[in-house]
Length: 398
Image (cartoon, rainbow, N blue to C red; front, side):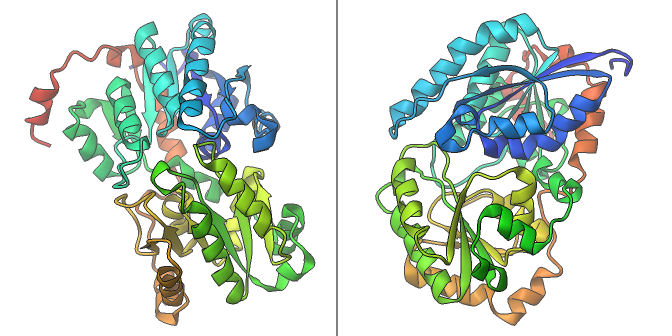
């Protein structure tokens, strides 16, 4: 183990608001720790004005940047996403090499995470992968990207014992895997409470929204649903409006099909009972969820974060299916009939009473403390070389 007195140089990569929000509590703690020389490399949608230029939220948090790398190909195709990844790879190698971190932190299942793991592997820099071992049944590219990143990574900080077991099945050594809970939940413990009127005003909702129940709708495109995604959103929004909700719409991520979804959201925003907030700062998003009655769409926030707020989730379509989920999460096929049935269920008094006793399977909101302890004490170099035979690991007792 390394001494706490040794200053460790830590680098993290972030390309989009969603992954920064998941990790931001940790990044701020690392920034404030005198035993850490922490830097963040931002790229992708963070630097895109059309996606809200979320790099400004990083700067507002006081997190120090190693560099801002413009990589995003603002196309609406599968090849654009791959070209964006290649831009990040070629532009970041020398930046990472010159900073020479003791460890790199990478989080999630997007292409930039795989790029970070490749850079770490080839440059001989230990990598710590967060949120590995998860798995959805939708067949989306995120699954193999997540698992491939895990095979390249040196260490794993996972959210749940099920995820640890999955990494063991992939042939990862037990000594490399730490169950810390999900960092995504810590912000609910740390972010100050804002009252409902302030949230509505800052998000730009009209005055009539103040008295209505709130529903948050966030939908990210996947290739298999490009043709129907806009219909899912418009159907769910229409039904929520008929039930008297004010609907808050979040922007989709940069995956193929996002342009069509943005057009649909802009049309819905013409209704005064709808607020298309696009991208908002983390503290405002947290408080928007705190004051909302439900979340729908297919965002991971419905699985990871909503249960901590005792909030029901109605997941639309294929994304997120098969993942570990609390009893508050209902999965539907996106049709009007299925959505009405799910909405009827979550509005029932019995279902609402059950939320009071809901426990979030992803953690308790204290994961940052566990992660900080590990980062201070782990000898990263001891985990750089992966010489163990996966076949032998898979046959070891668990």
